[in-house]
Image 1: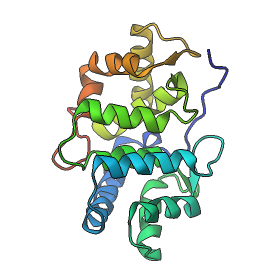
Image 2 (image 1 turned 90 degrees about the horizontal axis):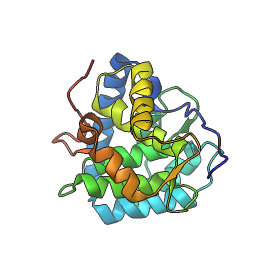
Image 3 (image 1 turned 60 degrees about the vertical axis):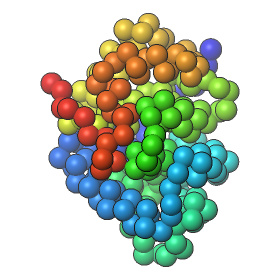
Amino acid sequence: MSSRQPVRRKSSLSNLGSGERKLSIAAQFNMFQEIKSQVKLDQAKLEALAKAYLDADKEENEEVSEETFNKLMTGLGVDNNASFLSALFSAFDVMNTKYVDFRELVFSLFKTVDNTSVDDILKLVFHVYDTSRTGKLAVDSLRDALKTALSRGTDLDPGTIGVVVIDVFREEKVGPFDELDFKQVQKMIQSHEIIKQCFEKKEDGLLKAPAVS
C-alpha cells in the first residue's frame, strides 16, 4: 500500500476546457511535425526518453523546469534551437506555470510513432508514470495517465473527465491507496472502450476518439 497523496498537475492539458484544449493540441501537433523532421522517432528512442525523464531533476509533483525540459529534448536529438525549444515548452506549459508534465509529451509523441499497438503504448505509459520504479502504479499516477488520455481523446470538460476516471476506479474496485501492476492496468484500459480508444494510434497522432456525453 502507498501513503502518497494525490497531487494536481498544474501544467496538465486536462485542466483546460475542451475549446482551449483543442487549440493547445493543434499547437502541440505542429511542434511534433517539426520534431519529426529533425528526429526519426521510434519506440526505442521514446523508451530512452522516458528513462531520461525518470532520471531527471523534477519537482515533487513530477513536473520539469524549462532547463530540464530542454536537456531532455536535445538528448532525444531535437536541434538545440532556443526559439524552437521555447515554443515547444510553451505549447506544453498550458497554464503558464513555468513547468510542464513531461509525461504528457512522451505520451503524445508516442502517438506519432508508426507500427505501435495499444499494448506498446500502455507499456511506455506505465513505465513513464512509474516514477518510483516499483513496477506498480499508485492510483494518483494512474489517474493522471487516464486524464491525459481522455483530455487528448475526447471533448469532455475537465470535471467530466474526473468523474469518468472515478467511475472506472469504482467499477474496478480500486482503492485510493492501491497500487496496480501492468497486467491490472492493461485489463482496466482494455475493459473500457472510450479509454481504450484514447490509447489507440490515430493518423494525426492526436488521440481523437468519439466525444461522449
